[in-house]
Every structure is written in structure tokens, then in C-alpha cells.
Length: 294
Image (cartoon, rainbow, N blue to C red):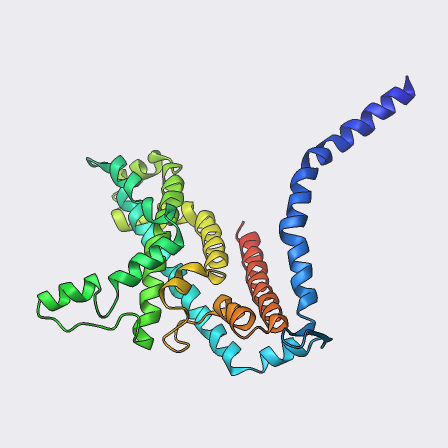
């Protein structure tokens, strides 16, 4: 009996891990092994023409860190990420507050506003590249008909980054709006009713009730949107391919250029690892801040 009881306890103790095993194996295959492989490749220099495979250690990393191209791409990545995340959070909060009000067609608006987020980044990139084309774009056509000067949205180095950030915000705002809407619906109405009785205006309600109630959600959204935006590739690649020049070349596009245009796979792998480390450091500090806030 004692043996059966002990075997039963062992079975019950390992049972949860058996259920987790398929997910763990999938994580190892999909995430852990590719990361180890990329790190390994970053220690070598390839020459596809001569078919050489030379160990260089941290040589690729040192070359990248000393490169002005990498530092420029890093700076543009921070601009791209900061502008996109700020626009997504502020825009999402504004739309969520608007859609949290009762008006006719509210549910219809909520449904249709999800379309940009559900649409492929490649499709959106192609459509917006056509809309913003300086030769046959919709925007410039409207400007010309109104007698206004046309703009080179994607050919001007300054306007190109603003354009791709704006399109990225437009695509991602529906997600942040839906998540903030869920947070708003969880705030007890009694708090607003009590504030109204005390004579609080809309600003005081927003400042002392809405924002504190959404604090944790906004921090989580800040973390998630930062991670997603920093490694974003398809939209900006389709719209500008990093151009004009290097005006919109962020780190993911630089990894692509090193690997598939210059065929320096070791350098591309090293740049990818550095991008992952930068993202990891950012995640670490935000989790620390989130822990202190809680």
C-alpha cells in the first residue's frame, strides 16, 4: 500500500510537467535552438564564393559596434520605436475613451476599426506606398487638385521616417484601443458617480480615477508595443526598404542587408544577437519598474 501511495504521489507531482512538456519542446524548437544557432553563426565569417568558414570569435561584434552604419541604424531604431509606441498608446487611449461613450453605431465602429490590425503588414505596406507615392499617390493627387504643393512622402529623408511611423501607428492603434477599452470597462461606475457628486470635472475624473486604474495595463502595453515595434520588419521594408539612402533603415533591416544583400551571414547573425540583447535589456528594466509599481 505504501508503495502504491508513493507511486501515486510521484505521478501526481510529475503530471503537470507532462502537460507542459509539449509546449516546452515547441519553445525549444521554435525559439531556443534558433537563438543558439544564430549566436554560433555570429562567431564565424562566411565566404560563399570561396566556401570558407572561418572562426573569428567576437570579431563580428566588434566590427558592428565600431561601425557608424550600426550606430546610425540604432539611433533610427530608437526614433522609430519611440514615435510608434507613443502614437499607439496616446492614440489608443484617446480612441478607447471615445468608444467607451454610448452613441449610435458604437459596435459597428469597434468592428471596422480592427481591420488595419488584422490586415497583413505586407498588404498595408503596398497600399500605403501607393497612397504616398510622389508621382501617382492619392495624397499628392488630392493636394494637386486643391492647388497645394505636393510632397515627396517616401523620397524625402525627413518625411520618410514620419510617414512609416504614422502608418505603423495607424495599423497598431486598434489593438491598443481594444485592450484599453477592456481596462476601462473594468473600472467601477460607482467611482465616477461618487466623483460627480463631489463636483469633479472630466479632467479630475480622468486624472484621479481613469489613469490610476489603467496604470498596470498601460505599462504592460508599453512593454509589448516596444518589443513588437523594435523588431518590426515587413511594413517598413515594403514601404521604403530602408531608404531613401539609409533614412529609414532600422536594425532589423540592417540585419537583412548584412545577411541577404552583402552575404555576410556572420555579421548579420551578430547584429541580430545585439538587437535581441538591446530588447532584453529594455524588457528587464521595464519589468523592474513594473515590479516596483506593484
